[in-house]
Length: 203
Image (cartoon, rainbow, N blue to C red; front, side, top):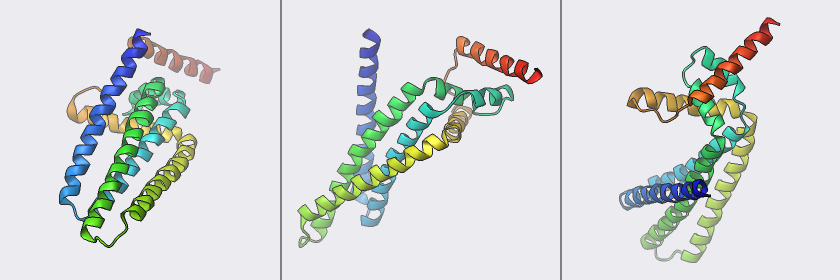
């Protein structure tokens, strides 16, 4: 019970920080950006939500076995991929529930800001109609994108996970900070899995 409360509190704080950060960045950008780049910003935020959903689905659908073989060959990103799959519930919760939901909320706010800018530029426009159309378009793009993304993530789960793992590997190499950790117990499991496969190949 205590660990669950701690996890919910961490998600609450993380969601608040990310949503505030995205809101500040998007609202600041909308003040200085013309209409065209503002629409591009909106599409980027929607795309961010779709990508995060793809990652969340992929880590839950992927199998860690292929990455053990890659880890035995010391391929960059393989250990990070093992970590992603083994912590699929936490990764999916962050990607889908935190980043995805925040992106959906912020995209709606950005869409509303664009509508206000259009009405201010041309008062003859009907604000109610523009708001309804913008909400419909944002919802349609988000739902359709996530629907396609889920199918893609399930069919290509290993590739998606490995691409994310390679980004983690690159960030760690550049920043010198480890954002993942496969504990001793998990490493022992990795070695055991590799040894089993080697025995099977000899048989």
